[in-house]
Length: 62
Image 1 (cartoon, rainbow, N blue to C red):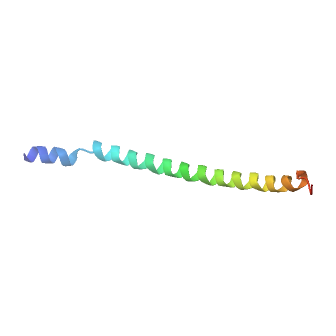
Image 2 (image 1 turned 90 degrees about the vertical axis):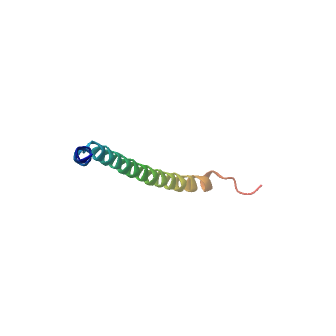
């Protein structure tokens, strides 16, 4: 049992897999945040363009 415990504590394969998983999760979080921010900024720019175009093309009165 003592040998099993020593081998188990010396084995680093699981730790490496967990570290890679955490790094991958962090990368996904950063990408998702960046895409969300870019999407919001693009939406705001397009809304500003639409607001400037609408009054000039709208008919006034009946």
